[in-house]
Length: 471
Image (cartoon, rainbow, N blue to C red):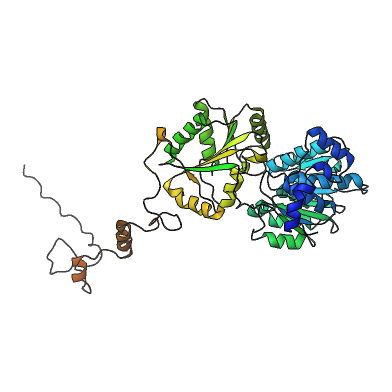
């Protein structure tokens, strides 16, 4: 069956609208019913039948589309229906970030609650000794980040010779983070008869084809929505800002006047996140901070605070843009504009999930205008312009625009800069220097200018005796 054919896409939502429609193990169906999970998302409708056929799969879907269950359900069904081998890990799930690993672990534990299947977590920030003990317990499923797993592999700890299923989640993100060689090194030790499922937000990444050609065999391809697709449930706005101080004022006003259950504020640097968090708390806002310099325990605690409602606002770097599934996030604010279109999409993808409405606001200074317009062209979507009258600034956007939407004349240097640059290349020519070119410099001295002074020091002479004073 062609899973990308228009006929399949037309019939899939109508033929398989419920998770109970799939031939899954009875224990899984009971667990889904107990969790209140009934309707299948589009990626689940198309990916689960392919995975149940034990085919390799390449799937692309936007964040929040339910792809975690799309690969967990058929994988768990295979483990429950197939006798376990004598030794070794049966399923390996590789993910780019610790947060995504913890999310998959949580979802997997929910689905395996009625079974004897065990799931282990291998990420940085945890005890190396504890993780070695975990491998000795031989859990059926390992969820891991490539860096830490490669460290264990170099010491010969894991055994993937009996691996039955390899899952790569957020493969494009792993490539962006430089994990390509680590992933290939890890998979080189895995059983060649395994099934491989690769999920990515985009299939157009430059290095993705090389990875798929190496790791997958005759894969089926499913592409629902890409990072360029417009998020219909998210209103996207930009607000011009004069400078960083004006941005802080705009951020405070938005967090105090917009209606939201939970909000995410994104910055490009850890220093900026650490500066904004305490500043917002001074204003009586329940704000926390999340970035890569924090220990794993601190990150887990902060995420627990956000889920429990102790913290309502999370100031974070892009470490939170992927892998975080937090219910109730209906406001995303880009204090710093994302560095790329893909990063922007993953940031705003934290809201507007599961059919709910969300709001994404980006604060833009004149230095970020061209970056913002580039992201608009990447998404093929124009952001809504907005101004807050109560705290409006002087900057309203470039006075002149190119046809591309970028600021006109932004790259030209001022005349004064060009003059200084030209002067820096050639030293200033003085008239006296030009007149004396080729002439020997006359030595200076206290005597006559016509008599040159002898070279060297004057010989030492005895001082003449002073005449005696008369009595």
